[in-house]
Image 1 (cartoon, rainbow, N blue to C red):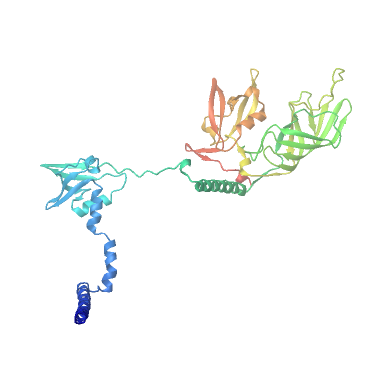
Image 2: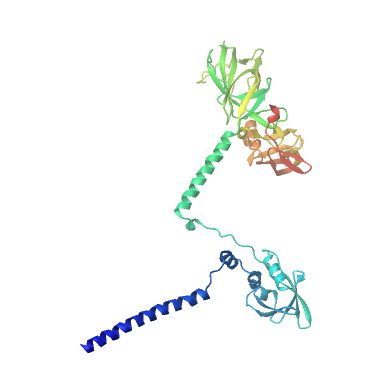
Amino acid sequence: MKRMLSLVLIVACALPAGAASVRAARPAAKRPARKSAPKAPKAEAKSAPAAAAAPAADSLDDIALFGLGAALVAQDDGLVVASVRPGSRAEQAGLKSGDQLLRVDGDSSSRAKVAGALRAWTPGTRLALVVRRGLEILPLETAPIPPARDYARGDRDLSEHEKALAAERSAQAVSDGRAVVSAVGPLVVPVRAEQGLWLRFTKGLPAGLKKGDEVVAEAATGLTVDATLDFLAVPPGSKMRARVLDAVDDGVTRTVRLAFYALDLSGGGTYTTLGSATAVSGDQRMARVAAGGTLVAAAPLPDAKRRAPEPVLDADARLRVRLLDPLVVDEPPSYWRVGPGLWVRTVEDSGKRLFEITHAIAGRSAEAAGLKIGDRLDAIGGRSTDKMDFAEAIDRLYGAPGTEVEVSVLRGKSQAIKLKRGLRWAGAKSAALPPPYNAQ
């Protein structure tokens, strides 16, 4: 019993001593921590990250100096090259270890100024250096910084999304372009009355016509806007429709009176008009036009071998029709064709068909090339004039403004000359001829 009591007493006495020692150890550990790490003021806590984010000026200078490729050491008398990196701009300029920098781009070589010159160095320019090497003062120069190359990506580098986006934008650009073209207003140009137009019947004017019949003739010449002969209002190949008002064939003479009422422009629309015949040329039977627009021709002699009646006018004949009312041509600018500034007529020389210049507009391409009235052309647009009629000649001379046509002029021998359509020359300089707005 005494042994148990003494053991309990020993344990009971030991527990408070151990607990006291633990409690005494904890405060002793905390108190030094509070004393060694006092709380910093709030203002200092906020400014610390900002100070860390902004690099010092020395750091910026180090970055700039690194781009030269030379290790520079600051000494009392300036910067000295400690080492040069192989392949660097410093080595290309000729800098060597031990060189002392005196000037960089004309300025003194303090560390900050050298760094500033390097930061201001732009692609395509050179950096001028002055160094002392031993007892020598040497000027050095760097190679220019090459401009940054734009990386061009090809089709293989595009993603599917980029390809779809490119196709969409391309389709939109085409649509926008067509909208711009369609929005261009038509060019309304009046052609005054009393103008004449030569027509031909491609299969001849047939015999046996009756009142009310309709015939179609083709324009053998072009009709210009005005006397300048610049723009064609009615190009060759245009169709003109006519109604037969009266037709008589008494076996001796044949008379036909036509009323022209519609014009189908080649490359343009259809216009109602009113025209009357005034003259005939190129007919072998000496047909003529009487007062009032009646065509009179001699009846052919009877011929038992002839299967079909002879036409009133053959295919080579030309019928001149005068416009009785003004014609208002309402077409987009792309319709109008212009020439190089000359007009021609058909002539024969040694059995060969040529075209002689009868009119040359001052200040136009033909005059600038030295062509003049009386010159004869034996080829137009690469085709011999002997194989074309007047209508084809005009059709080849006229075209889109700014395009070229080659003509061959006879001057002892054929000489090829290229003429530009729709250009005005002044002081050896050319300017585009505007569309015929002044004719409105």
